[in-house]
Image (cartoon, rainbow, N blue to C red; front, side, top):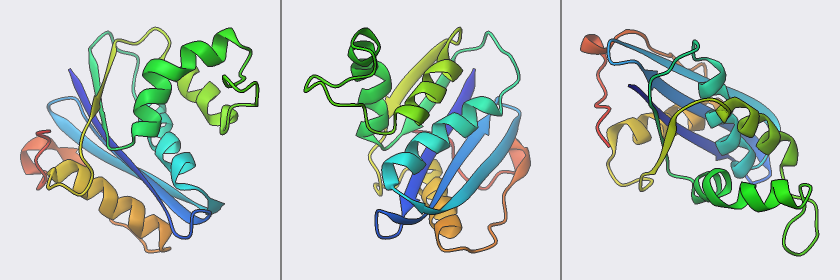
Length: 160
């Protein structure tokens, strides 16, 4: 089983943004993140999920992705089926916003056993709070210290 928590942030929306993910296979934990100079919160939420999935080695394990973004959650589990059927158009026949990232996320989910879980943001879920801290740091241009090591030494609970 692989556990992932993700979050994204944008100052100004649009403005400087950051994204973060915590990835654990039950033995090791790795924090990843990054930034963009001019972006939106939704793009950073998508980037967090994409970066997390891209960082995985091939696996048959179930991947549990915890996100506080209803946009990502509903987009990848519900809306995407209609977008694909309609050639990346919305019900209003307009181009899907952030189509470039949705296509990458969709490609990265193919062939994987993923369960998407929604967590309440800013509600005391330790791993979600840590992702928020990382994403905010990257959005603020701070040099964020990312953890990469044994789960037993990780200071953050990965309980949703």
